[in-house]
Length: 70
Image (cartoon, helix red, strand yellow):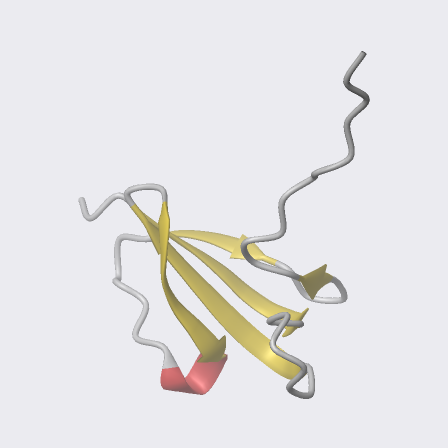
């Protein structure tokens, strides 16, 4: 088993200012983003856990940074 997870078929906003990618893929392995792009261009391992993001928007690497420090 590769330990990979693939988030597939969502709309991808990569945070670079580029246009969103529809039918995108995000491949995560060992807790790190390994590949991001059009689903047709990303090689997903056969034994990867697949998460269907159809109808959703995916923003890899987004961190919730809202906090109140007191």
